[in-house]
Image (tube, rainbow, N blue to C red; front, side, top):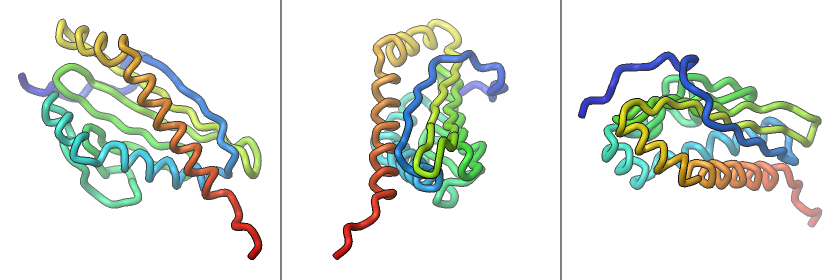
Length: 164
């Protein structure tokens, strides 16, 4: 089955949003976000999965840290605006999707990080895939794990070393 052409990302239906408050400045959160997303979607397992579902892009490419125009397995970086937000888009046989991360400064050592998912799941194959990924809560668990890791990494960066 061929991969469909692009869908306007603004036309994609809302799936969910997850929010964490990070006890770190926006710069630390931004760095942790880029590194965590790159790690999560650049390994051999991610590439195998994307090939299995006929996803595009199929492999990581482009500069690191991530910038607009770079790619991960299953995602093109369409926006990387430090430290405001990161937007990823992709498509495969069963879905067109967009994952947006937005940072909101709450104070010098507090940042709200939002992750919003939008996706379309056309046809019977798309409906089955949605049930498997969204209905099973697998997407929710994976995204929460990703956000928890970003929070942990950013907060670790913000801790000053103890005086020696």
